[in-house]
Length: 175
Image 1 (cartoon, rainbow, N blue to C red):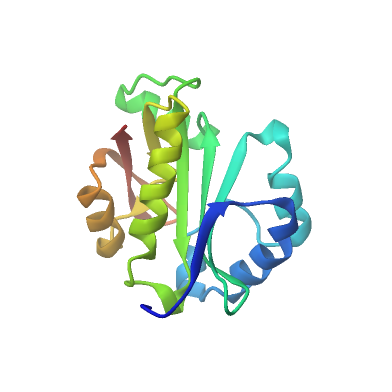
Image 2: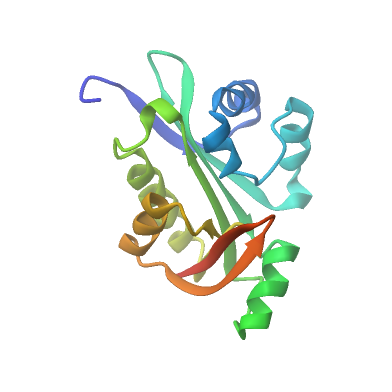
């Protein structure tokens, strides 16, 4: 990775085709852990309409002209998460909370891209006066690598739930 030229930034409309290719190259295992939106090009375009309050962030491998990591920040909460969090007794603040959904391409995992993207996003959010980050749909309890990543970055477990027979943890980070 030392010789790779990477570009990190906010997703732009002209990058939707690259994002479509990125998402559809993910393995079944990786894509099963990233369920923020459907992977069709039309859905990507609709997902990023301004009224949906979603912002995408990417890391691009310049030489290969391809996205190698992707994350979403949604201002506020998604309905399923909101209900669960309120049931745990978490007070929600739509103006200063956001929801976070990250992913890294299979061939690029465990190479520091998650840290790089997370740090970039966290700095952006702090500049926008965002106070708390909530994991989108939680994290699967068996995904120890992801759980350790979140704990390392200061996330705290706020509750647990079952979805389609899989146990998950809701996690929050105060910024």
